[in-house]
Length: 365
Image (cartoon, rainbow, N blue to C red; front, side):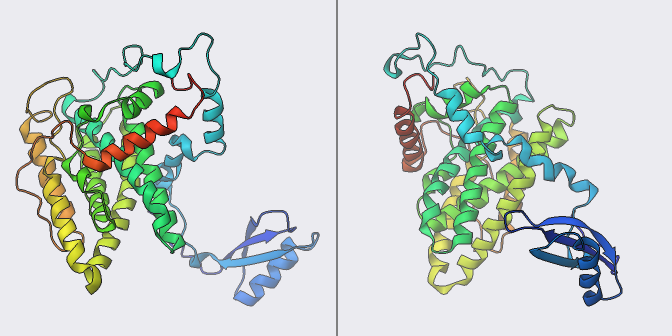
């Protein structure tokens, strides 16, 4: 975890040599006091150059990473949407119409020619639960996109946008780590009819801001619980590093939604509304770990019932520890039902379809 250094006489020096350059770390120095440190830095690092800015910071006033933070710091590199130029590159790659490509109305939206066979990738029970949670995260990310412009507070708008973006990225990463290629990921999220989706009933409650906070909290908690179970059950799995990184980022989301839950509970103007929304969302979340086995038309929970019960109990403990108004999560898990999702899912699918129709014919073939 990040820590505060103990060497009190060491200062870190940051300098900007021109108005068009960035402020860079140029070195360290030892000084008995702050004023002397600044002048020593000026003589040491600014003697030969005209400096535009000079910042000198005592090392003990900084929070720095430790060796154990390396995986967390590197986690973002597995999310290509965060890389410079990614959106432009991806659009350019998909904007070239292959020779003889059919028009959108003639294209086959089936998955038979795409790599989406998840058999043999991870334990079946855990795998199916991850696929279901990926669908939940996809809808959550879409709905958070609608919330970005709801605030006059820039910081909260940025936070909501970041969480929504990461929810979408996590959804795609989960599928790719469980055997899907990019074409199959796109097809799963954009070409399925609503009747084929198997989202949690909590998705239907993604309407106003209080219910969004409750849903965000529950889904972040569910991802955290399932990631911890996966790490224990599949310690050598190839998808585990990505799952571990997703867990770390979802814990940050969980902390964000917890702060909102405490705030909405504390404010007299919002307490009753949030209490009602939180009760409805947590009650609907009974099916969070009730995904059916892929391709099996039964009401059997994914994997064995003991797994669903164990995960459900861990979710209940994590959801209740939020400083909010209390949870109505049932004692036992329920099975998910295909075709639910209400307006939240319908809106996400309709918007995705509308965007895809505006692309050059064949881009999404």
